[in-house]
Length: 340
Ligand SMILES: [Zn+2]
Image (cartoon, rainbow, N blue to C red; front, side, top):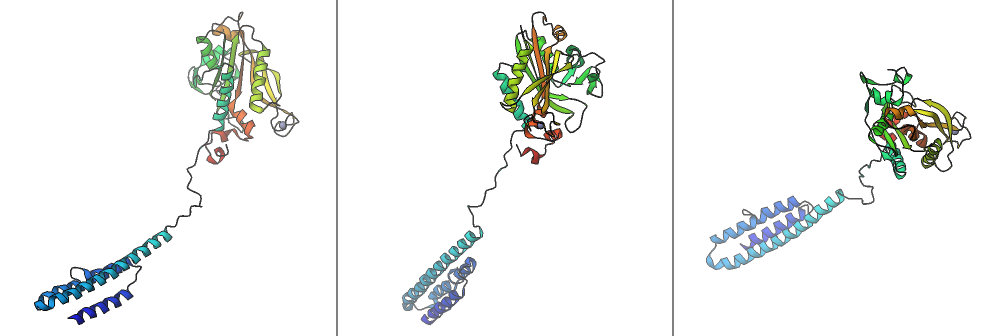
């Protein structure tokens, strides 16, 4: 019987030498073939019952030695196979820690938002209250109370979006000032930032844009106060070296009225293509509040005077960032917005 055992040992050694030691499954199959419930070594143990009793201990010892030998070799082979498998996984799933990661794109604030916040900050520091008003106004608040006569060209359907009889999408934020004057007693200072709507659409005009208007009412308020505040504001927006000038103009709700220009932010006032060689750029309108507007809001125009001003946020953003088309600001083009 011992020949059977020795022969099985040789067969096993032979088979083991042929097995692919990097293949865990092949090694496992070999284990089952020899040590499984119906395995070859298990078979030899079962045959022990057919032997005479005196031969069984010696036989059993030999088979158990073979079993231990096979088990040890198989275990070594399994370890080798597991290592091979791990190495394979590591080389396949190799992580290069020097590669850039998958970053989450981070957004940025919109240039118009930034400018609006900056304007609000500036005026808040000077004690101005902020009133955002409403996008939809009645004819009274958008025109009539602002001393705009019924035949004024800005009331034309070609300039203003009419919703219903007497209801408009506000064409300026001046209506907010009327609401404010109706509900507040002077002295006060306030700004009214917000969206406004006009029937207009070209490179520098959009049907919707943002404005910020301001109003100061107190005793003895003069045009000098207006100039002082706005000059300071322009320095804040465009830097210490910016120059300002006021040109006589006309608005129904201010008297006297002026257009305010700043020295060209591109050429510093020397004259360039952007400022059409003048060295100046128009930035907004302003003036002393017309007594008729005060009258419409129940404010004593003998006692109080005031000034008002307004400018477009889109225009400021365009000047500051050299944006050629106003529509880019509302186009939601990520390539454009990513630059800020
Ligand atoms: Zn210029």
